Length: 187
Image (cartoon, rainbow, N blue to C red; front, side, top):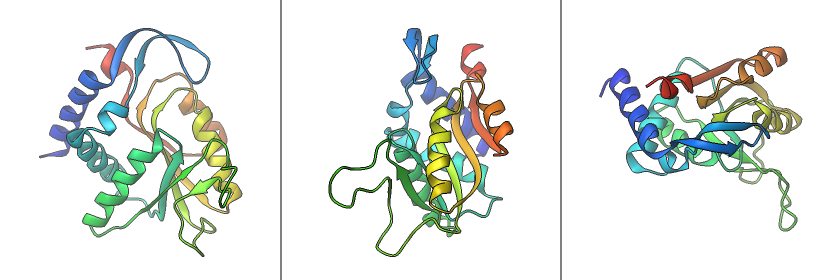
């Protein structure tokens, strides 16, 4: 399937499984009359495969060691991209940042590393399912930078077009979205 056909099919899946209308309060605290809950798309076999393929294609020209982001939205995406990267012989390892470090066990804030592995000196892409203002990604960026990584970019599946691009531009972090909310609102 071509990239444009994959993109059209994934948009159809998002529209059917993950897009809705109705008043909702977003993670940013803002009110909205539409929402994206991408978990039904990310956890659907075809949705996961298409999402991974399109995200991997969007990153193909970047030198990346790791991909990850804030739990929960980034976990299925990062895992799917890690898997497809292996199948395409360009391995990108995955991780995720906890919203709050575990209070037991190793008490980790960033998960996914074997003993002796870290983000120190690694090139990292922060991934999100839906981005509104960029606040959640900034939390992940801060944790990952504290761990010594270089942030290559933030990649989101859907940009709600409500300030994230400006947030990342001001912080000097490149931002890329597979889709914009307007693509779903105007159809």
